[in-house]
Amino acid sequence: MLILVLYVDDLFLTDEDSLIIRCKKELATEFEMKDLGLMHYFLGLEVWQRPNEIILSQGKYTIDILKRFGMMDCKPMSTPMETNLKKLSISAANSDFADPSEYRQLIGSLMYLVNTRPDIYYAASALSQFMNQPKHVHLVAAKHILRYLGGTIGYGLKYSINTTINLEVYTDSDWVGSVTDRKSTSGICFSLGSTMISWASRKQSSVALSIVEAEYIASSVATREAVWLRKLLAGLFGQPWESIVIYCDNQSCIKMFNNLVFHDRSKHVETHYHYIRDMAQRGAIQLKYINTDEQVSDVLTKPLARVKFEYFREKLGMVENTTLIVRESQS
Image (tube, rainbow, N blue to C red; front, side):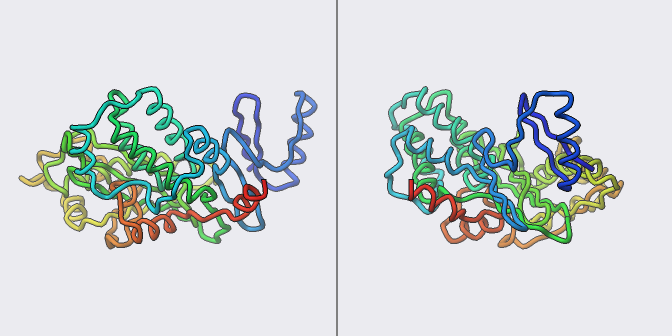
């Protein structure tokens, strides 16, 4: 099946070469078109196509951000955010207000960068909560992300040819991670073969009374996205998709998921979060345990120390694009 993607006046085709050539000829008879060959650059997204692999990155866009905010020659940092969030909240109480316009432009630029940089998603998402009245300490934390990007300009997502294509979901939660409103943060990422294809880091809408509830809510949100992706992939491949495995590192959450009886420990959980049980009974998803040290989505729920952060960054499928580094150093 030939897949055609259209965005305004840009059109992309993917399938076997013979079908693509045939489709181009048929489209050219009806529309005025210009063939640009293999896709290399699109809306700030760089596509590096090599034998058996594709690397998606935003190196040029990262350099433009660093130059725009005067951080091109900054000292690199090993992680995008400090691990002590309480220190950030305490410092904000006594900090002066920052320029809202500059702060919003910086956070907006970073949020567009997460299309290929899930490693900065949590940091950018956490700081986006202060765009209404940003303090100087928040601006410093945002520039900390720029310092990290300064040392990882060439990083991107590497997609390799894999004989088996399995959709796997990793879900985690940082219980009452927000110091201001005590809400938890859900981290979700979806893997299709070699690398992550979708990810999210967002604050939960209600306060969780236990870490089990926070994990259960995160798993339910992941289920909704997984069911949609399952339908999308079934349509693309033209065949029913197998049950999707959702990995959770909390065994109590899995036990509550398997227990269909509403008891004192689960009756306070909102009804719509039990959607995950319905999907499991239909065979759409499975909830399985994974060790915390292998829970990739942990990087989307909290700031981590350097060693653990770099390990999960690799698990996300991120690599350094040396071709980009060489090209930028020569220019």
